[in-house]
Image (cartoon, rainbow, N blue to C red; front, side):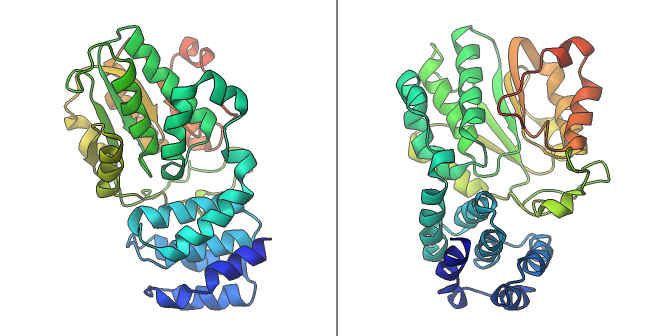
Length: 320
Protein backbone atom coordinates (compact mmCIF):
# COMPACT_ATOMS: atom_id res chain seq x y z
CA UNK A 1 0.00 0.00 0.00
CA UNK A 2 2.78 2.46 0.88
CA UNK A 3 4.51 1.82 -2.46
CA UNK A 4 1.24 2.49 -4.24
CA UNK A 5 0.91 5.84 -2.45
CA UNK A 6 4.50 6.65 -3.34
CA UNK A 7 3.86 6.01 -7.02
CA UNK A 8 0.71 8.13 -6.97
CA UNK A 9 2.66 11.06 -5.57
CA UNK A 10 5.62 10.44 -7.87
CA UNK A 11 3.60 10.71 -11.07
CA UNK A 12 3.53 14.52 -11.07
CA UNK A 13 6.62 15.27 -9.07
CA UNK A 14 8.55 16.54 -12.08
CA UNK A 15 6.15 19.45 -12.48
CA UNK A 16 7.15 21.25 -9.32
CA UNK A 17 10.12 23.44 -8.59
CA UNK A 18 13.51 22.11 -7.51
CA UNK A 19 15.56 22.99 -4.45
CA UNK A 20 18.80 21.84 -2.85
CA UNK A 21 19.02 18.05 -2.72
CA UNK A 22 15.66 17.40 -4.36
CA UNK A 23 16.98 15.58 -7.41
CA UNK A 24 19.20 13.40 -5.24
CA UNK A 25 16.25 12.66 -2.97
CA UNK A 26 14.14 11.69 -5.96
CA UNK A 27 16.88 9.34 -7.10
CA UNK A 28 17.05 7.80 -3.64
CA UNK A 29 13.29 7.26 -3.66
CA UNK A 30 13.45 5.72 -7.11
CA UNK A 31 15.95 3.19 -5.77
CA UNK A 32 13.79 2.51 -2.70
CA UNK A 33 16.18 4.19 -0.26
CA UNK A 34 13.74 6.12 1.95
CA UNK A 35 16.30 6.71 4.67
CA UNK A 36 18.71 8.53 2.36
CA UNK A 37 15.86 10.48 0.80
CA UNK A 38 14.69 11.69 4.22
CA UNK A 39 18.23 12.66 5.20
CA UNK A 40 18.56 14.79 2.08
CA UNK A 41 15.13 16.32 2.53
CA UNK A 42 15.81 17.06 6.21
CA UNK A 43 18.78 19.12 5.02
CA UNK A 44 16.50 20.96 2.62
CA UNK A 45 14.02 21.70 5.42
CA UNK A 46 16.82 23.22 7.48
CA UNK A 47 17.12 25.87 4.75
CA UNK A 48 13.70 27.20 5.89
CA UNK A 49 12.60 27.96 2.36
CA UNK A 50 9.16 26.64 1.51
CA UNK A 51 9.17 24.91 -1.87
CA UNK A 52 6.43 22.99 -3.59
CA UNK A 53 8.54 19.83 -3.80
CA UNK A 54 10.21 19.00 -0.51
CA UNK A 55 7.23 18.07 1.66
CA UNK A 56 5.59 16.03 -1.11
CA UNK A 57 8.80 14.05 -1.42
CA UNK A 58 9.02 13.73 2.36
CA UNK A 59 5.50 12.28 2.31
CA UNK A 60 6.53 9.73 -0.30
CA UNK A 61 9.60 8.77 1.74
CA UNK A 62 7.51 8.36 4.90
CA UNK A 63 5.07 6.16 3.04
CA UNK A 64 7.89 4.05 1.68
CA UNK A 65 8.96 3.68 5.32
CA UNK A 66 5.42 2.59 6.30
CA UNK A 67 4.81 5.76 8.32
CA UNK A 68 1.56 7.14 6.89
CA UNK A 69 0.91 9.50 9.82
CA UNK A 70 4.18 11.35 9.21
CA UNK A 71 3.38 11.34 5.49
CA UNK A 72 0.06 13.00 6.27
CA UNK A 73 1.75 15.71 8.32
CA UNK A 74 4.23 16.40 5.53
CA UNK A 75 1.38 16.78 3.04
CA UNK A 76 -0.52 19.11 5.37
CA UNK A 77 2.61 21.21 5.77
CA UNK A 78 2.93 21.45 1.99
CA UNK A 79 -0.69 22.54 1.63
CA UNK A 80 -0.29 25.27 4.24
CA UNK A 81 2.20 26.94 1.91
CA UNK A 82 0.86 25.73 -1.43
CA UNK A 83 -2.91 25.23 -1.07
CA UNK A 84 -3.25 24.82 -4.83
CA UNK A 85 -0.94 21.78 -4.94
CA UNK A 86 -2.88 19.08 -6.76
CA UNK A 87 -0.16 16.52 -6.05
CA UNK A 88 -0.33 16.96 -2.30
CA UNK A 89 -4.12 17.12 -2.21
CA UNK A 90 -4.54 13.96 -4.28
CA UNK A 91 -2.08 12.01 -2.16
CA UNK A 92 -3.67 13.35 1.06
CA UNK A 93 -7.04 11.93 0.04
CA UNK A 94 -5.52 8.45 -0.15
CA UNK A 95 -3.58 8.81 3.09
CA UNK A 96 -6.58 10.18 5.00
CA UNK A 97 -8.68 7.26 3.78
CA UNK A 98 -6.06 4.80 5.00
CA UNK A 99 -5.87 6.55 8.38
CA UNK A 100 -9.61 7.08 8.84
CA UNK A 101 -9.85 4.73 11.86
CA UNK A 102 -7.38 7.02 13.66
CA UNK A 103 -8.68 10.32 12.33
CA UNK A 104 -12.44 9.84 12.48
CA UNK A 105 -14.22 10.71 15.72
CA UNK A 106 -15.87 7.87 17.63
CA UNK A 107 -19.64 7.82 17.45
CA UNK A 108 -19.80 8.54 21.18
CA UNK A 109 -17.88 11.81 20.73
CA UNK A 110 -20.06 12.84 17.78
CA UNK A 111 -23.13 12.17 19.91
CA UNK A 112 -21.92 13.80 23.12
CA UNK A 113 -19.89 16.67 21.63
CA UNK A 114 -21.80 17.81 18.51
CA UNK A 115 -20.30 21.31 18.46
CA UNK A 116 -16.76 19.99 18.75
CA UNK A 117 -17.51 17.39 16.09
CA UNK A 118 -18.60 20.07 13.63
CA UNK A 119 -15.52 22.18 14.38
CA UNK A 120 -13.23 19.17 14.12
CA UNK A 121 -14.37 18.32 10.61
CA UNK A 122 -13.39 21.81 9.52
CA UNK A 123 -9.95 21.96 11.16
CA UNK A 124 -8.83 18.32 10.96
CA UNK A 125 -6.55 18.99 8.00
CA UNK A 126 -5.13 22.14 9.59
CA UNK A 127 -3.54 20.73 12.72
CA UNK A 128 -0.87 18.28 13.85
CA UNK A 129 -2.82 17.34 16.97
CA UNK A 130 -4.86 14.21 17.60
CA UNK A 131 -8.57 14.56 18.17
CA UNK A 132 -8.26 13.80 21.94
CA UNK A 133 -5.82 16.70 22.34
CA UNK A 134 -8.08 18.97 20.34
CA UNK A 135 -11.10 17.96 22.41
CA UNK A 136 -9.15 18.74 25.57
CA UNK A 137 -8.24 22.21 24.26
CA UNK A 138 -11.92 22.74 23.41
CA UNK A 139 -12.90 21.74 26.95
CA UNK A 140 -10.18 23.90 28.50
CA UNK A 141 -11.37 27.02 26.72
CA UNK A 142 -15.03 26.16 27.30
CA UNK A 143 -14.43 25.78 31.01
CA UNK A 144 -12.63 29.09 31.51
CA UNK A 145 -15.36 30.88 29.56
CA UNK A 146 -18.22 29.27 31.46
CA UNK A 147 -16.47 29.76 34.81
CA UNK A 148 -15.68 33.39 34.08
CA UNK A 149 -11.89 33.07 34.42
CA UNK A 150 -10.36 36.38 33.40
CA UNK A 151 -7.75 36.59 30.68
CA UNK A 152 -6.83 35.69 27.13
CA UNK A 153 -6.07 32.41 25.38
CA UNK A 154 -2.46 31.91 24.27
CA UNK A 155 -0.99 29.17 22.11
CA UNK A 156 2.78 28.72 21.82
CA UNK A 157 3.52 26.59 18.76
CA UNK A 158 0.90 26.92 16.02
CA UNK A 159 1.84 24.82 12.95
CA UNK A 160 -1.36 24.67 10.87
CA UNK A 161 -3.40 26.93 13.13
CA UNK A 162 -6.31 24.54 13.59
CA UNK A 163 -6.05 24.38 17.37
CA UNK A 164 -5.87 28.17 17.69
CA UNK A 165 -8.96 28.55 15.51
CA UNK A 166 -10.71 25.84 17.54
CA UNK A 167 -9.95 27.82 20.71
CA UNK A 168 -11.39 30.96 19.09
CA UNK A 169 -14.52 29.05 18.11
CA UNK A 170 -14.93 27.89 21.71
CA UNK A 171 -14.54 31.48 22.93
CA UNK A 172 -17.17 32.70 20.47
CA UNK A 173 -19.64 30.03 21.51
CA UNK A 174 -19.11 29.78 25.26
CA UNK A 175 -18.03 33.22 26.43
CA UNK A 176 -21.22 34.87 27.69
CA UNK A 177 -19.88 38.31 26.80
CA UNK A 178 -19.65 37.34 23.14
CA UNK A 179 -17.05 40.05 22.57
CA UNK A 180 -13.76 39.00 21.00
CA UNK A 181 -12.07 42.10 22.41
CA UNK A 182 -12.60 40.92 25.98
CA UNK A 183 -11.02 37.48 25.49
CA UNK A 184 -8.47 37.40 22.71
CA UNK A 185 -6.69 34.42 21.16
CA UNK A 186 -2.96 34.77 20.45
CA UNK A 187 -1.06 32.30 18.26
CA UNK A 188 2.71 32.49 18.78
CA UNK A 189 5.11 30.86 16.34
CA UNK A 190 8.08 31.57 14.08
CA UNK A 191 5.82 30.49 11.19
CA UNK A 192 8.96 29.32 9.39
CA UNK A 193 9.52 26.00 11.11
CA UNK A 194 11.06 24.67 14.29
CA UNK A 195 14.16 26.36 15.73
CA UNK A 196 17.32 24.34 16.25
CA UNK A 197 17.10 21.70 19.01
CA UNK A 198 19.71 21.35 21.74
CA UNK A 199 21.32 18.27 23.22
CA UNK A 200 18.47 18.08 25.73
CA UNK A 201 15.95 17.48 22.96
CA UNK A 202 15.92 13.71 22.62
CA UNK A 203 13.03 11.29 22.29
CA UNK A 204 11.87 10.29 25.74
CA UNK A 205 11.44 6.60 25.00
CA UNK A 206 14.48 5.86 22.81
CA UNK A 207 16.91 8.64 23.71
CA UNK A 208 17.47 9.35 20.01
CA UNK A 209 18.33 12.90 19.05
CA UNK A 210 15.66 15.14 17.58
CA UNK A 211 17.14 14.92 14.09
CA UNK A 212 16.42 11.17 14.00
CA UNK A 213 12.68 11.86 14.11
CA UNK A 214 12.78 13.81 10.81
CA UNK A 215 10.72 16.48 12.60
CA UNK A 216 13.42 18.90 13.64
CA UNK A 217 14.82 22.21 12.36
CA UNK A 218 12.57 23.89 9.80
CA UNK A 219 9.71 21.41 10.03
CA UNK A 220 6.17 21.95 11.36
CA UNK A 221 6.04 25.28 9.55
CA UNK A 222 2.99 27.30 8.67
CA UNK A 223 2.31 30.86 7.70
CA UNK A 224 0.51 33.79 9.28
CA UNK A 225 -1.40 34.17 6.00
CA UNK A 226 -2.66 30.61 6.21
CA UNK A 227 -3.76 31.18 9.80
CA UNK A 228 -5.55 34.38 8.80
CA UNK A 229 -7.38 32.61 5.97
CA UNK A 230 -8.44 29.78 8.25
CA UNK A 231 -9.68 32.14 10.96
CA UNK A 232 -11.57 34.22 8.39
CA UNK A 233 -13.18 31.07 6.99
CA UNK A 234 -14.67 30.38 10.42
CA UNK A 235 -15.40 34.04 11.18
CA UNK A 236 -13.19 34.24 14.28
CA UNK A 237 -10.32 36.45 15.39
CA UNK A 238 -6.88 34.98 16.05
CA UNK A 239 -3.88 37.27 16.49
CA UNK A 240 -0.64 35.83 15.04
CA UNK A 241 2.55 36.65 16.95
CA UNK A 242 5.44 36.04 14.57
CA UNK A 243 8.97 35.31 15.77
CA UNK A 244 11.01 33.33 18.24
CA UNK A 245 9.45 33.18 21.70
CA UNK A 246 12.38 34.96 23.34
CA UNK A 247 11.80 37.88 20.98
CA UNK A 248 8.01 38.09 21.10
CA UNK A 249 6.73 36.84 24.46
CA UNK A 250 8.36 39.56 26.61
CA UNK A 251 6.36 42.15 24.67
CA UNK A 252 3.14 40.16 24.26
CA UNK A 253 0.26 42.53 25.11
CA UNK A 254 -1.36 40.12 27.56
CA UNK A 255 -1.79 40.88 31.27
CA UNK A 256 -3.81 37.80 32.23
CA UNK A 257 -3.94 34.30 30.74
CA UNK A 258 -7.03 32.13 31.16
CA UNK A 259 -5.95 29.20 28.99
CA UNK A 260 -2.46 28.31 27.79
CA UNK A 261 -1.48 25.70 25.20
CA UNK A 262 2.26 25.04 25.02
CA UNK A 263 3.22 23.01 21.94
CA UNK A 264 6.85 24.13 21.78
CA UNK A 265 8.51 20.69 21.63
CA UNK A 266 12.02 21.79 22.63
CA UNK A 267 13.31 22.35 26.14
CA UNK A 268 14.42 25.96 25.70
CA UNK A 269 11.24 26.99 23.88
CA UNK A 270 9.08 25.43 26.59
CA UNK A 271 11.07 27.15 29.34
CA UNK A 272 10.70 30.49 27.56
CA UNK A 273 6.93 30.08 27.25
CA UNK A 274 6.59 29.17 30.91
CA UNK A 275 8.83 31.94 32.19
CA UNK A 276 6.84 34.62 30.42
CA UNK A 277 3.28 33.27 30.57
CA UNK A 278 2.93 31.02 33.61
CA UNK A 279 3.07 33.98 36.04
CA UNK A 280 0.12 35.51 34.16
CA UNK A 281 -2.15 32.50 34.68
CA UNK A 282 -5.27 33.38 36.64
CA UNK A 283 -6.86 31.24 39.35
CA UNK A 284 -8.58 28.22 37.74
CA UNK A 285 -6.81 28.83 34.42
CA UNK A 286 -6.06 25.80 32.25
CA UNK A 287 -2.74 24.68 30.76
CA UNK A 288 -2.05 21.98 28.19
CA UNK A 289 1.47 20.76 27.34
CA UNK A 290 1.98 18.94 24.09
CA UNK A 291 4.73 16.30 23.70
CA UNK A 292 5.36 16.00 27.45
CA UNK A 293 5.79 12.24 27.10
CA UNK A 294 7.50 12.37 23.70
CA UNK A 295 10.37 14.85 24.03
CA UNK A 296 12.60 14.48 27.07
CA UNK A 297 13.59 18.15 26.95
CA UNK A 298 9.94 19.24 27.08
CA UNK A 299 9.32 17.03 30.10
CA UNK A 300 12.42 18.31 31.90
CA UNK A 301 11.39 21.90 31.24
CA UNK A 302 7.89 21.37 32.64
CA UNK A 303 9.04 19.34 35.62
CA UNK A 304 11.73 21.83 36.58
CA UNK A 305 9.30 24.74 36.39
CA UNK A 306 6.24 23.35 38.13
CA UNK A 307 5.91 22.77 41.83
CA UNK A 308 5.58 19.17 43.06
CA UNK A 309 1.86 19.79 43.68
CA UNK A 310 1.37 21.07 40.14
CA UNK A 311 3.26 18.12 38.67
CA UNK A 312 1.03 15.70 40.55
CA UNK A 313 -1.99 17.43 39.02
CA UNK A 314 -0.83 16.73 35.45
CA UNK A 315 -3.09 14.34 33.55
CA UNK A 316 -2.29 12.56 30.29
CA UNK A 317 -4.58 13.28 27.38
CA UNK A 318 -3.49 10.58 24.93
CA UNK A 319 -0.26 9.25 26.38
CA UNK A 320 1.89 11.79 24.56
